Length: 136
Length: 488
Image 1 (tube, helix red, strand yellow):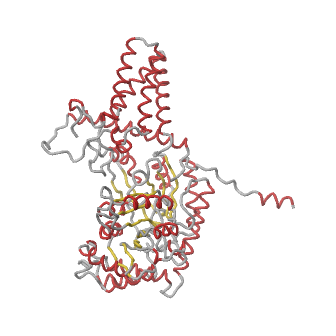
Image 2: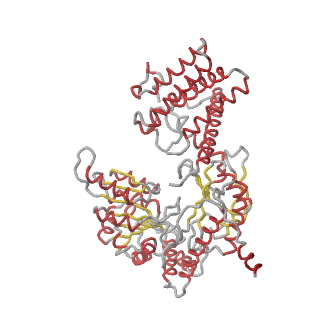
Image 3: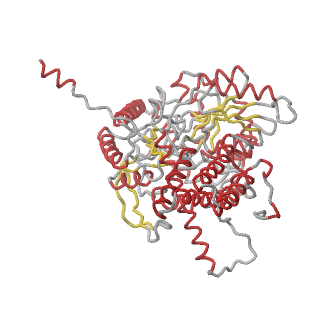
């Protein structure tokens, strides 16, 4: 609906990689891993943990749904959703490639991408495992 | 929809992202600070869950000094704005006793009736003395005075319909009438940018609501065909009735409705039309009769015409004009007529006098002068703004002109800087407009003189340069004539 949302997302990821590289002075691979993990934490919190809307007008209609479930009115596998599933996978591949598949980074990155992709699958719509995060 | 430049979209999204991130950070730390505060409302549910009022607390309150400014005089072309100060970073505002005299570019004062008028004000004062400030009753009990009956006939005559009915509030006119006209089993097709009162009325009616793309008769036809072919949801029975609701001038875009084409589509598919002329009645048209006159549509083709008295007539309240049968039905069923207090008599007298001035029945040609002046003022202002390079929306002849700001930080910048230079403008952000399309809305009045407009243009141009909203290239000043003279 609004032009430039996807581009802004990709640009924020790229610039945060540059920021991490300049602040920590580490190898590019470690920087991509750091970006991947922060991306995991932030997108998991906002897409799959926080529920409801930032406006009071709808009187709590969406209080049981996470932001991922509210996207595109609940329609599954729209273009937006497919794009947002692809981004963590691409980040994962870049992080693995630049760290040469070494051990501690491999495990952390794989954990991040598997949690994110599983949470975004259409079968997980409105599913709350073990009742975690089920209260309004 | 407005064509958003790509880089502007990127920067605006980034700004909103930054504001959102800072808001979340502050909420996060506030949770820790409040952890240790005593909670003495044990057992009661919270009024607001944490996320619900995030937008209000973290975005709106930061710039709330740009909205809701109190004024201390009548909303004429120049008025007094009360200064406010805040001791806690805009969380609360206190009024001071200082006022600033500012140029008024925000009030809906299209024909200049908002301040004392030589014909209307003495008559309004007389009716206040004779009929007092309120009828203290509902229309069906003791609240119909001679003035109400006179105004209903006058409005019907002015608009070109057989009969009319009055209400005390413009918003209520829409939200209480639509449920009386249509119910469950009916279909309402409304423009995507319709006003909140129409949305509220449509939701309250219980009918199915479908939206068509703003001002697009082609899409309206598509929606009509699809809905008529499909019928009611689930049962697929034919719809009981179909009403298409459009507005004359859209207040956030300033553009006129494509009325002739929409009426043609509705007639083809036998749907009723409801025209909301809140901003266009009295302000456009050769003799002020609204968009029907301007676009050459016969009022008999529109089934129900609604309007308000707030904008061009300097009063308050609304009306519905339709055939005698519909008005009779509304008088018996509409709760706003049966249970709400009737319009205040001085307000009714103000509208009567204003309409008489517009029609020229007061014995002078001030009405025609006002209409000509507002047309000239609007066209002059809009063309000058466009020449300076601002992105201005709206059609020619429309007195509402929104200037696009886009970026959320430019809203308070523009608003506060203009106020410092003694020009009061109204800025609008989400949720009244889409998220990325924040704008400053200017309403031109017939009481603005040429000097006022030139002052305003000067201030807006300087502030526009400071804030950076001249998205289009400015036209270079004309130097061709000088060259020609020199050659000779």
